[in-house]
Image (cartoon, rainbow, N blue to C red):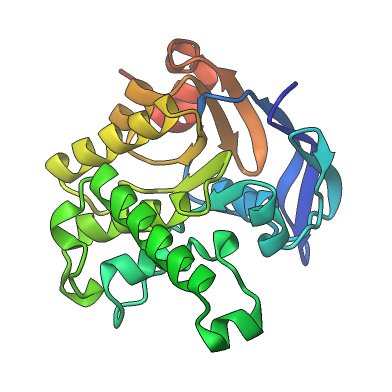
Length: 252
């Protein structure tokens, strides 16, 4: 069974059809990249999958369950998490507290217990901090655990967002341009983080413009052009597709 199945998905904003009759499946344990020119509909597609936008037509199934139109917090409970094209970091909080925000699904939210600071709450909070600290070390942010987020370099903040997304223990992680604005060294660090996440068993959907990163890390690639599927296949198949070369990758 596929982890994610999209069928005949479309969305319209006024008279503009941003996504048109799109269908694809994503198998568990893979890195599935979505590429295409600016305006192709990549982020719009992620927004529909994650419940930010409701599709005009079509269906989305997550792990065999229909989830079309579910709200983001409901999808998070079903094992879906994401990062954003523009950083969504709380700059006045520490790096660790930012990651803790992503852990809230696994914390005791009983109001009375929280107000009384019962031992179960204290233990749960301590365990959550240990878990989030380990996540920060996992993405190479061990030196920033107690740093203020507003004092961290841009490349580190990109990895901080990934750590926060992982804190909810997702089955499917969507990354929207994690390498945007990074230098070669920072891109290499993000590459290694994504590869390690996939090896750990988390399925990854990656939207990215860095073709070297995409071609080197992906198991499968979906190419969009003006909201339609232009091509789909392995990196080798996509690289050799003449329609993709003409529309996006450019002549060799």
